[in-house]
Length: 427
Image (cartoon, rainbow, N blue to C red; front, side):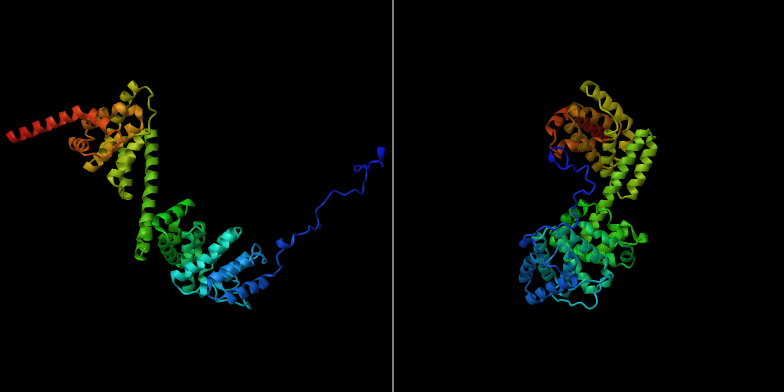
């Protein structure tokens, strides 16, 4: 004892630090779950499914109620194995030996969308009721996709339908598709064949825009070529395969993704070339090669070139100095602009990009006419394109202001055109 009769813990060699080891906590009765081994859990689920039979509404109610007494959290994999395949699966996708099974499952269902949709509703209700099953269900689907070779053709089809429907209604994320990039599945053509059925189901549930959004959300849109072996990972092969399979919408989406990626890379390279001060001849040669290789139209190309040129300089904040700077800068790059305005539509595209830029960047509002005159003088824009832009309304942005700016120049062009015609007649 220390002074005052207090116990000195510091001086007591036998005193142990507090520990939770072996501690028991009383559990409220309603929180208790029946303790089952996987086989006992399986037997309880299968018995309930068999008792409810093909009435999937009753099945959903049974599963809802069973979650209160069975340990879904611990045996989620067993639960989903049963609901999809009818019993616990062994590695590789075959039903485990000596286990009872049920025909109230996806693999034993009729092979049509209506029936598989009804099963999808069972999964939806179950996961909405027990949110903690979401992660386990995604893991289950990823596992099942890796087991595809162990399933029959009909079982694969039904799994593809189910997965497509659940991707469509948001129960699953597109990250599950990563399992289809497994080397063995890809090599034997299983992945691509399964993906055709999956995407058909997904697009039927939603549309190609929803599918595209779901893929982009998890950066899966740029990985679809991985459904094929390395020697076939080309956009041409992908487009041909999926178009012939009746999925032209998906093929077009992937082709557009390729074009978008190519355009981004092209724009970055052009920006780098301009920053380095590469000769314009080299820049033009490179741009034309990329344009041909990636089937980029001249209208798209002139937009990319314009964006690069306008982004290559720090613009003066003083309006009176800005015009001079803009004219000097654009004159320097006029050969590059002229190389990609060989068509009337490309010239009009450039005029509209100029109109949009001057409207969006208010300090350029008064420079519009001066830039157009420059482009006319250096043969970037023809009088036909300018007159067409003036006559035909294409874009509302600042149009009335720019029409007023262009009035005198357009009148001069018209007069010059009339004089030219008169001279031709006299000749």
